[in-house]
Length: 267
Image (cartoon, rainbow, N blue to C red; front, side):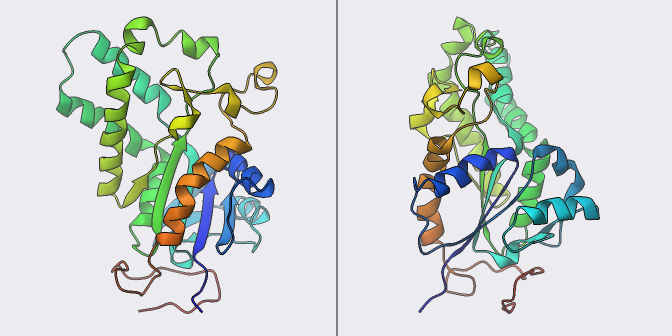
């Protein structure tokens, strides 16, 4: 009998919605060996990617990440998994999209080539993206990246940043922005996941149906609930179950990196 596909969800505080979705039975993860490895975003600046793994830069950070992993992992090796989902991880695209839309609304000053350069360069500068790219470089796991979701609708500071002239561009331009980012990510060996359409409101916000409880009172327009986590995992689980096992026909060819499990390195 074949081993279960191995999935790790790595992220900052935004991965909590995925854990909640699993805990509440909103998604079927049966037949998948699932682990979580993450911590609040402030610790991400103490992480680095090298040799096909993510390593904390100090013992304190290593212990903080190990605390929230069922196996007590102090580092995250791509070779231990078939798929790694990088969730949130300080990769923000809302302000990037808003900035490019504002440039476009000002007139025909931004060529398609410049748009691609602005979008791809900005995504690649984020630490979480660089960590994902470091994992992907090992070729030992499929790397998925779900950027931090759009802000929940209704926050005045963000609503005011989308005046009518920018809002008018969203239906045509934002899908193209996602296509550009997905193509750039693919060049780096990463599968970029766009925000699930059913969660999107007003083109570039997240519907209040996916807000955390009491979001307005807490002024938390950034985090989302278990239903949002379920929408992400609905995209992810078919990919996990369909990913070829390492070493089988169609597997990736790069040399395996370090491991932190008890499985023998192949190759």
